[in-house]
Image 1 (tube, helix red, strand yellow):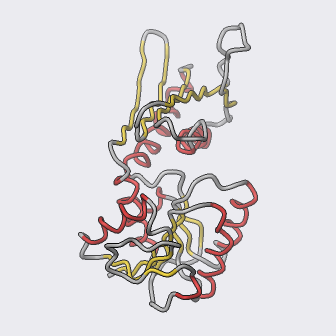
Image 2 (cartoon, one colour):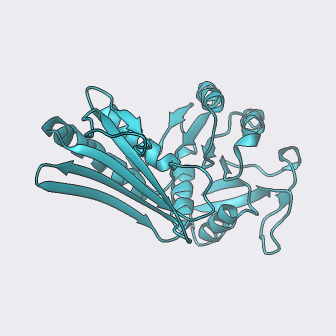
Image 3 (tube, rainbow, N blue to C red):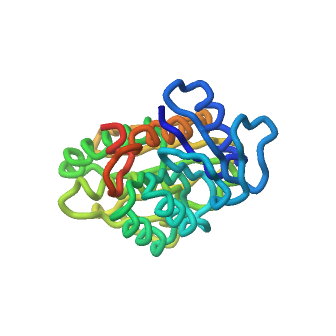
Length: 252
C-alpha cells in the first residue's frame, strides 16, 4: 500500500487523483494540503505542510511552480520523502533546483504524466533515428483548449527534446514561419499550436518524406489519464534511491 500526501487536493487534478485512488487497492491518500478542503474528502486536509501529522511514502504535487522550494523542504524534513512533481511551467532555475534536490530525494518529474504520451515519445525516438537519416522532415502539431496560456505545450517541447536526444545532430526548433519566404531547411523541427474549445490535449508528430507521410498521434479525452500516470509514478517512486526519474523510468 502506497501512502500519499496530495498537495493541491482541491484543484481539478487533485480531485481527479482522489477519485482514482479511492478505486485503487494499492494506494491511499492519507492527507491533503490545500487552502480549501474538498467537502467530500475522506482524509484530513491541512492549509500547510507543517500541520500534516500523518506518515506517508510519497508526496504528490499537482498545484503551482511557485511552491517548489516549500515542497522540496517538506520532503527533506520528512526524511527525504519521494516527490512526484506533476506541475508544469518550471523556470530554468527551478529545474536546476529540482536536479540539485534529486541528489538527496527520489523525484519523478515529467512534462506529461500520461502513460500513452510517454509511450508515444519512445516510438517517436525510434522513428526519428531511421526517418531523419532518410531526409524526412519533422513537424509537431499540438492542440489544447482555449484557456491554455502557454504555447507550444510542455509536452510538445518534451517530444522535440526526445527527438533531438535520438539524433546524432540536434535540430533547431521553429515556432513561426510567417516572416520567412524560403524553402523549408532540413535542420529544423517545426512546432505549431492550436487553441480552441475544450480540447484536452492532442499531439501529432509528423514525419514527412518524399511521397509518404508517417504520423504518430496521441489524443487525450479527459485529464484522468494524467492522474492515472501520477498514481503509477507514486507507486514506482516509493522506496527508490535518490535520483531524478522520468516517466520513461516508470513505464520501464
